[in-house]
Structure formats: C-alpha cells, structure tokens
Image 1 (cartoon, helix red, strand yellow):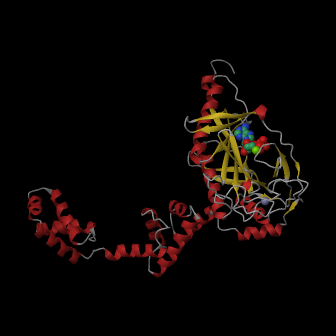
Image 2 (image 1 turned 180 degrees about the vertical axis):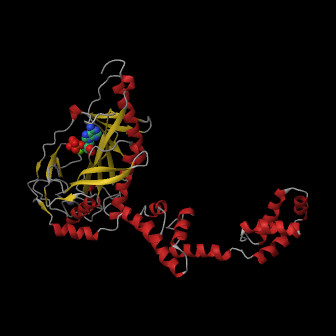
Image 3 (image 1 turned 180 degrees about the horizontal axis):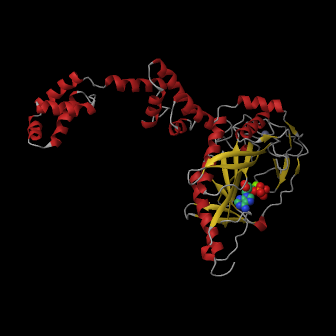
Length: 448
Ligand code: ADP
Ligand code: MG
Ligand code: ZN
C-alpha cells in the first residue's frame, strides 16, 4: 500500500460463526451413560466407552441423530442420505481416547440458511455450511498447580453448526446467535444455556477494504466466550484492532484469541504455528450413517412450529401487529400461554388483541399468573370502571361540596384547582371513575 493513500481506505468486517450445542438426550452419543451430568458428582457418569478404555466399542445414539436432523431441517439444510463419523486426532487430557469422534468430510446436514436482522434493520440471509454430529470432551478444572478431570461430560452429544463467512456487522452475528438459541429451545433439543456451556460460540473475524470481493487471507478465531454480551464486545474490539493494524500498514496473523472482560480486550491464545493438524480419518468402529428420506419426512412432520411461522400465524389468526407477534412468539412457553388465554378469553368475550396488549404492557410473569386469571384481570378492569354519566355527576357533586377551597380557587381563575376536584372523585370511586369523562362534567357543574 502506498504511503499517504491509507487514510481514505474504508474497511468492512467479514465474519463466520461456529456454534456448538449440547443436546439434552437421555444418554451419551456413543454409550449408555446418562447425559444428564450437570452438577453431578464428578466421574459418576462414565463407562469404558466414554473413558476411552482400549477395546471398548461405540454405538450411535439414535435420539441424538434425530435432534441433529431437526436442527438441520429448521436451518433449511439438506439431510445427507449417507454421512460418516471421523476421528479428529489431538492430544489433550480432556480427551481420553486421544481423538474426538466428529464428522468432517461427510456431515449429516449441509447447505442451509437463516434470515437475520442486520445493523440497519434489514433482513439478510446467512448461509449455513453444515450442521454435524460430534461428542463433547471431559471437563478440566484448574486449581493452582493441579488440574482435575471430570469425564461426566465426555461423550455427551454435541452438534456443531458452521456458517459461511456472510456476516458483515456485529448486530447480525448477535441476532444469528439469539435465533439459534431460540430454535434449539423451540425444538426442545437443548436448554441452550450459555452460562452452563450448553451453547458455545466461536466467531471468526477478519476485515477487508470496502469493495474487495475476495475473502481476507487470514481469520482470527474468538473462542471461549460464554455470553452474547461478551461476544459482541470481543467482536467490536477485534474489528477495531484489526483495522488499526492494517491502517498502520501492518499484517494480521491467523490466530485464536480470547476475551478479557476486566481489561475489555481480546488476547492471544494460540498462533497459527501452534495450530493442530487433526489428521482426520474415518472412524473404523462405526458404520456409515444412513438416513432414508422417509425417516427425514417423519422427523419433519414431528417438528414443532418454528418461531417465525408462529409469528406469522399470530398476525394472521389473531390480527396482532408484527411487533406484538414477535414478542409473544419469543419463547414457546409464552406463545402457549398467550394461546391458552385467547381460548379462555373467547368464552368471556375478551379479544386476542386485548390479551396481547395486557400481557405485553403489564409485563405479565407467566410463572406467577394463570392464563385464566389474566382474563379476569382484563374483565375486572372494564367492569369496575365507572363510566355512567349520572353516576359520575353524583360523585362530582360530592367532591365539589367536600372541597369548597378548590371550588373558590377555580372560580377565581385557578384552572389547576380542577385537579383537586378530579382527585376527590377518584378517591370517592376508589380509583374506578373514568377520568377522561370527569373534566367536562366538573366544568359543567361549576359553571352552573
Ligand atoms: P476450518 O475448516 O479450519 O474450521 P472453515 O473454512 O470451515 O475453517 O471456516 C471456519 C469458520 O470461519 C467458518 O464459519 C467460516 O465462515 C469462517 N471463515 C472462513 N474464512 C473467513 C474469513 N476470511 N474471515 C472470517 N471468517 C472466515
Ligand atoms: Mg472449525
Ligand atoms: Zn459411557
């Protein structure tokens, strides 16, 4: 780059995401051990297979495969009729076999897409490269100079979802990650809790001059980030760091970086030179995975309604606004709650839109109030209100006779004194008077 020309250059980020999600199946991926390990006594959910003992043979968990296919279908992937497991070899104490069983060249789900909202509120399509099946590793806990190993997590089913490098801003990345979490929960395949590590994000970040169409020849992988907020912060920091380096005429190296939230910066974890060569090869102890189209058809039929479909249906069926429908379909639980209330409301002449407004405006906690109760709340509000003119006039007269000073003030030109009289009526009616109708009634009485 010529000196003096660098100033005018504008850069844009190019990003791709790798998301790991732990499935909530009954048993582990390749053995009968319970996969429900969280918070359990260390090394109590283990067997020769997930401890990697010599001679132990793995077998495939059908439930996990179905869950992986569900994820693939929700992301518009094609489901491979034939896929294969491979060994990803590396040496690390959390991996007792010395390799992780994963999929590499023949993944189960390929070529999908997901719509997300970008920085400017536009819908953009993110291409999904693959969603493949693999297994989790053991968990290491470092204590001073000691490291403890818990193999309860070893072999728990994991699905990895990889996008193409289609993200151009951080908001789309955030929306994508949030949408994936929502999908996992809707499908019921994972709790997708970030803090517990059910869902893990890795963002690949590079930058290039605006106008350039080729991908940058490097990418920085941001790893070990356990919240959406930290991920956004790490990406924003990384984009700035990379642009600053390029503007100075520097080069950015391919590396893995972590996020230090105390110092609010990313830091080097592993450089390209230390990168693994995984020496993938087909897992000889497992057959190839064959999925018949009619099996996929059955799983497709069993899929629960997805968030965006529910949102559209709420608009169509209940005449909600897009915004209302979006809020109420955020979680399956909230959506079901709303629909239960609608069903109950029908019997009592309460409209779906009223119910939607009530749930949203009153920020109803669905754990605390039953759907039937909110119908009563809505009805109660209407029944309780005093709107009858004659009734209101009686109350207004009483307030006038009880507040002679306010009346005198009003008559001498202090309009604000009317508030005192309105307040009087509200008190007499225990807050149930229709305040919008009160002002003209009081004015009429005071004139007369
Ligand atoms: P690997 O096989 O080494 O994991 P991939 O090509 O599968 O590498 O890419 C991993 C992730 O990095 C994908 O999400 C991909 O979209 C993303 N990626 C690839 N190239 C770039 C780039 N230049 N900048 C940002 N992300 C990239
Ligand atoms: Mg990768
Ligand atoms: Zn086991």
